[in-house]
Amino acid sequence: MGSDAHVIVVGARADALAAARELVEELEARWSRFRPTSDVSVMNALAGRPVRVAPSTLALVERAIAGVAISGGRYDPTVLGAVISAGYDRSFERLDPADVPTDPMLRSGADEILTDRSAGTVELPAAVGFDPGGIGKGFAADLVVERLILDGAEGACVNLGGDVRVEGQAPDGGAWAVGIRDPFEPATTTVAGLRSGAVATSTRTRRTLGAPAARRHHLIDPSSGRPAWNGLASATVIAAEGWQAEVLAKAAFVAGPGHGIDLLERASVDGLTVDDRGTVRSTAGFGRFSSRTIGSHGSSAGPR
Image (cartoon, rainbow, N blue to C red):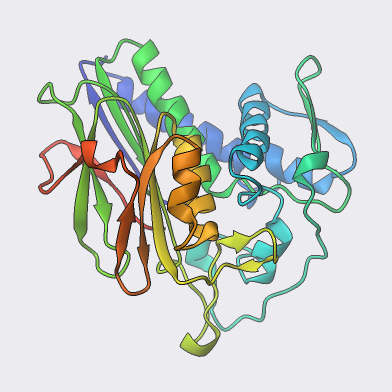
């Protein structure tokens, strides 16, 4: 998934970490848009026709469609054409900032995606590409935690590229401590303590491309089809599940400084935003999760 995986398990079987690694690799093989044999790559290649996919892929697409609704359209999994046009046509570590972005001639069309549970198929509209992007990391973290708990773990913390999902007890028996990083500095500024749930951050200050005068990033505003530049540096969300946190963090970022927090309040989740001046705004309920110091057991929801 183009990022590191960090897994902490409490009270689990000896092979728990190996099982977690195997599941992450399995999901990567199914969802990566950079692997030609993945479900996502085949869906994109055969857009306009139904494609039989793994149950986990069908579940991912269903959540992506739901994400469009809960975000008011500020999240859209079919902005792949705009992502490629911004220069993100391969995994980030392989990108050359000097390359000229190409136009893949893809349109958006999330409302036209067809899923069939009985047949196990997904049909993308013609000339539409599906990008699992951040929601893939969030949902993968959900699935790994779910597997670990079902296999008998007393607690689990999974961090996939900055999307953190926790469940059950931490090693010290208390809440899990999830650090939220400053979008401008490589330091943790806030810590969220939670026993069950997820934390995700979207930011434009990491994984950028181009010279300062022509800077590009991968967070696309679906309304314009271009990277969102609205005065917001990052948005962090705490939600029940990783896929929800990821979708709403991106939506709050796209909504901008004046509307991001309102969007989170309407979605009944908590979070915070940081604007270009370093001003932090948070939802009314965010304080119940936050503390000043990070504990010894947790992970960081770092900007990506």
